[in-house]
Image (cartoon, rainbow, N blue to C red; front, top):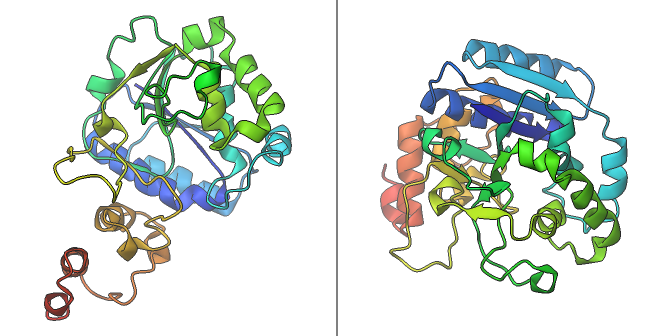
Length: 289
């Protein structure tokens, strides 16, 4: 099972939580991780490599030049919570070894809560990518149907077809010629380049919390995705899934970076109970826990 993450320096701590969750829930001897970064060796990177060894994850760290990506990123809409490292996934056919013919890409702001085997082993039926289709009419005129627009935070990719159909070239053509239309950056570019070649997968494989969704629209996540600008590592008590992030991140060497005020110093169980009670509006009871 080949898993790909791309990251910059700022995402090492969240990535460590994602890696811990993966190791805890997917004990497979054939698990192979590719961690792609655009910065040189440093102490934090060495610490991450040691951590991967400690949790028995077989990893390959791949360093690439960020120069060309940062130039393209500079033409896109500024989003402080996203970096040019997101573009690395657009080159995965070139970056990964030719022997890798299938890969599951995961954003660093994800947690894996259950086995990925069912997703990874599914038949793509001739599609290049399987991904959760969130729906969006942004690029209907370019062949992306309103129900077909997908979230690129989790993608199962047939790399044989990706390379054969030169998807990488198509994606970068979109990035360089349509930058004014790419509201969601490379995600939009991937949707345009892959129009009609994406198989939908269930929401539980890319579960994002939407506060506007109606009660009853809940699935038990396999992959939890902290999409958007509110992140649990900057404000864990403001995110409805912040408790489980704290549980995973608290088992990594970057646990001290968690800002859990005003509950700092409490046991994780007590802290999470207080957080849960506050989410239900029971502030008076939370103060008594």
